[in-house]
Length: 157
Image (cartoon, rainbow, N blue to C red; front, side, top):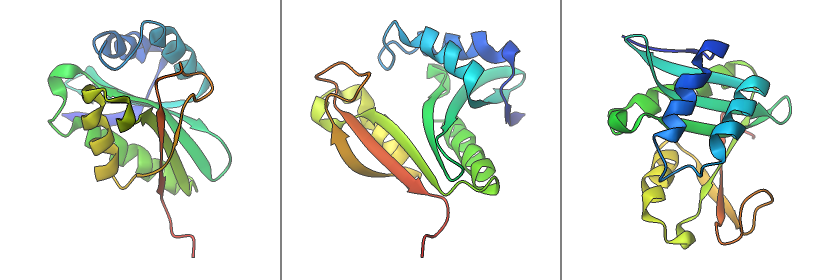
């Protein structure tokens, strides 16, 4: 049975395993950053039969705006809708908590790195709209252009 729930300290290693198992998406320094972010920010995991198969970490930037810092699914579970269920539930919980705007950063298509095409499509299919490209984004290496995506969780008019 698939369940989305708040992450606990016991989930950290499973989340890091997901990151380490996806070297095409995450550089070697990312696991320690994810470890730190899991301890400092809101996080959710998606369980299937008591196995963590995905996770998301969210940084609350203000009462009404957040950034999804990290979201990943185990490689063998991609394409099954697990990420969709995870992000849908996270966005619903954020909206219920009064969040109006969600930001996501990912590698821009101008990088020419094909592995991220599915990532951009994933966010776009969930209603996220790319609003800018920044290179270099502070904290990112030059030559890795960041695509900034946003989604509104409630009308602004």
